[in-house]
Length: 71
Ligand SMILES: [Zn+2]
Image (cartoon, rainbow, N blue to C red; front, side, top):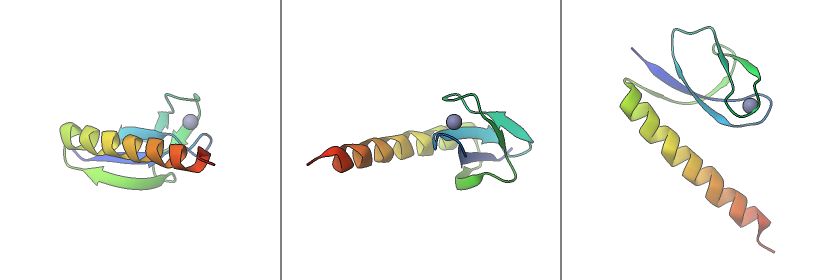
């Protein structure tokens, strides 16, 4: 079973989903994301690898936000 990491089209949050699902509800804003049309940032062959990638992506996004806010 393949897993995908998608970007929510509304809030830009990262979503972890199975590749065979049609839609996924964003856990951050409740938006229904179409799995085959959403922006894919990564894929993984199992849930463990996918969650590891997701954690790295969130860490990156967080540090980027901090950099932007810096004067
Ligand atoms: Zn969202």
